[in-house]
Image 1: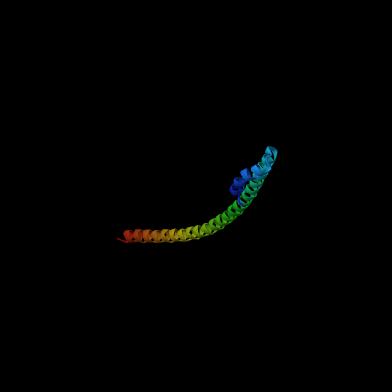
Image 2: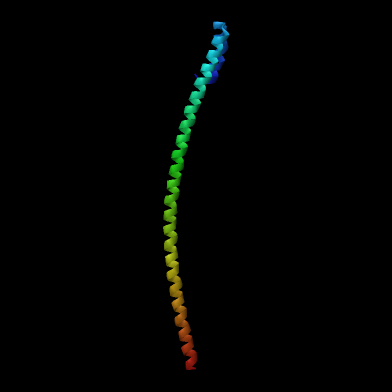
Length: 103
């Protein structure tokens, strides 16, 4: 029985018991049970949230490491291309200077 259904039964219990103190005890008991249940569910949700945050952080760190490696490799390749292009430009410059000197 959910708390809303339980609360609907309270007036029937009050009519049966005809005692106001019992009514308050029942209401407080039902409210305490409802709060306890909600508190447990909140604690479970918080634990699930923490687990998910940890998993997300692990995935982020793994992805960052992999992405860093990819960028590092791309940078190394780019540096080799720049060195190659630089050496080609130097050779062409030398060839051009030699050609100009020979004319």
